[in-house]
Length: 263
Ligand SMILES: NC(=O)c1ccc[n+]([C@@H]2O[C@H](COP(=O)([O-])OP(=O)(O)OC[C@H]3O[C@@H](n4cnc5c(N)ncnc54)[C@H](OP(=O)(O)O)[C@@H]3O)[C@@H](O)[C@H]2O)c1
Image: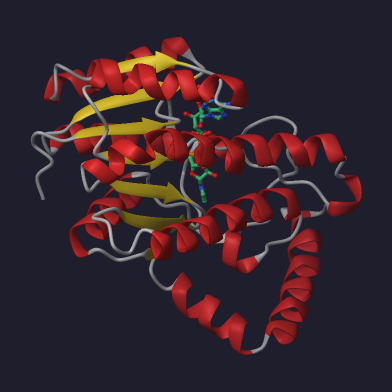
């Protein structure tokens, strides 16, 4: 699939999935806008992106500062020449037992993982409607599977997912298409950030390029929701058939993992 002539904004493009997405879109012909907080890391990614797409550019911004998002959106539209594809990818984990969460932590996770992509989407929406654009929200399997010690994180992603569903319904008579991509366990810095409990995940981490492929495929096929890897869709379907059994199974699995990891 080619994105020649298209302008793609990728948030959280300084590492991991966002960096891979930025390179993936640039390699397919798009002019890419990258943003995140770490200037040095953004510069490294931009250098790789510009090998494919010299007009691409980057902005350093803290997207958790919600008051700056409207002005940022205007700047991106001016300097990038509009946005055809918005990829809301920036996000933080928060692996912490519910009994140890504070209201401030929950607010902070919600601000970056939910409120900031929503503000950015709303600010760019008139242009996206005009251009029959795409919105890709990088959510998580956590939004559907409610893993242990991830109440704040999973709820922020579930909010993003449900927002995406409602948005697609409201925009059915426009050319805008919304896509939700739910990564499982991807090999990124997200598992090594401070201030998080050790992950209990027992899956082999996939490379970020798997998410890039899923995003490109979703845009090509028009799929609304995609899992990486795809078999997570079956687990989610099973959960909705019997939520109580799923949650009991999840609690038993958690106890086993905690014992196995000696936590
Ligand atoms: N890795 C996984 O297994 C996995 C699974 C499911 C979902 N996801 C989701 O995938 C997305 C990307 O995560 P990743 O795994 O690639 O981890 P990552 O390497 O830590 O990337 C997170 C990105 O978000 C940016 N970011 C975080 N806070 C920000 C802020 N306040 N303002 C602007 N940018 C901010 C980071 O840049 P700066 O630090 O430079 O600001 C970085 O570019 C996240 O939304 C995550 O929830 C990941």
